[in-house]
Image 1: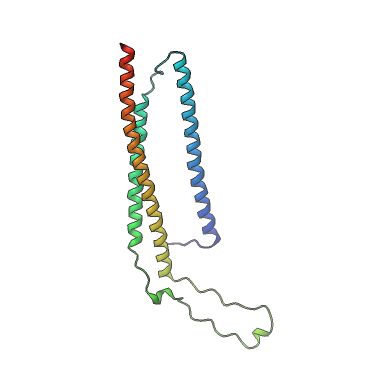
Image 2 (image 1 turned 180 degrees about the vertical axis):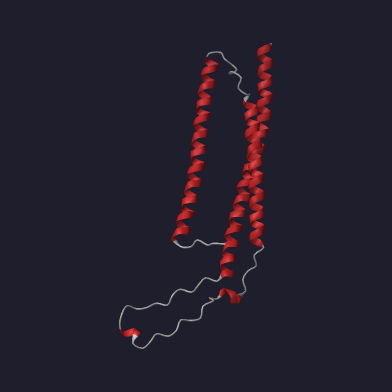
Length: 181
């Protein structure tokens, strides 16, 4: 499995995080604008005496669709996050000996090296593969917990949306009966 390290990994991680935030923020802004336009349209229609727009599905049906979509997305995120957390838990903690560097100490400097040229520093030790895998598993567990949390929130919001859609349906049926009388 290839590893990306250093500034490139930080840049990619930061870029993905910023892209995710912009994607969610953009969706929220567009959704807010759509709701605002729908509200203005409905208010104008009601002022002119129009109670139903042309062949559009009722709003309660759209609410149920949105609620079911949120429930499905929440369940998917919870399952994927739970799997990620479980896989991260399967990686054992490295033993104390494995936590130490795998490199031998650098050789002592030659007698005349210290007299000329810039100070030479020993190269950094190579990362221990066992410790690297354990650190990656910790990150995987954290991401899994975050995914489970977000999935649970979406699940609850979806259920609430479905409950409100049922109330919208009853209100729409009651309003239709009142106009027919």
